[in-house]
Image (cartoon, rainbow, N blue to C red; front, side):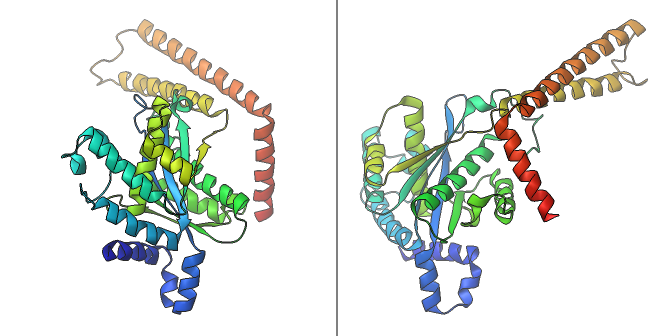
Length: 347
């Protein structure tokens, strides 16, 4: 178990390295005042799942150490596993390859019971895939907030920070650890920019945010268990014994993602604009002298250009409609006035 404790402490050293130069009495006080939130994701397939789910727990660093010890003991209790991964539990693969459905469910319940013995508050951030039905991956590439995970990350972090402010006012910071994945780096960059911008008042208690390995960190395995249980409940409406155990003892704060209502229209515009741009590029390619499928007649060119102009006109019409809707949206206008006013003061 000492290896897990050392792993937790080494991650803290990465997050708050300046503590290493402080006296023990100051370090210990800082540890007790620190909160940490660990999150893992589930429901990543829009064809199978209704929503992306980021599940996790919030607790003090001291409580996380105690919970990690107990989790490790439960993992290695017969039948023993080295780590918990919800996808392996569901497929009876990896660590669960020697289990049947009944013994796997019993192991999950034992782990959930272990979690329930500690002061860890559960969070479930959900992002419905219906918001992204018009999204085109190529058209929206490079845009902030274009991916489902972006909104899940922002919902999870803001949900924890706002809940903490409402229930536990103070100045204690919260450090976040998310299971490592490719989308996380850009999300952490957004997180750090928001943290440095006083406009985002809810970020006042935001600490550091780093990736972690769910095979190494017990707290991320606990988050993975909760994310999987919440995802199953979202998709089937059924509540397992493990889900009920955590809900009744730790509580689960559900934080649904509510993007701006204009988000689907934004994706729709990106998709239309990308298609027009692709058609224009194709026209230039076929107009070249050495093109293998060069236009064969002036009439063919006219027809192509006519279609291109029609599609461009449709894009412009949708764009003007979108701008008009934003102009009549009170929430959007209020947000922009506040943001522009703050930006002008900082200049």
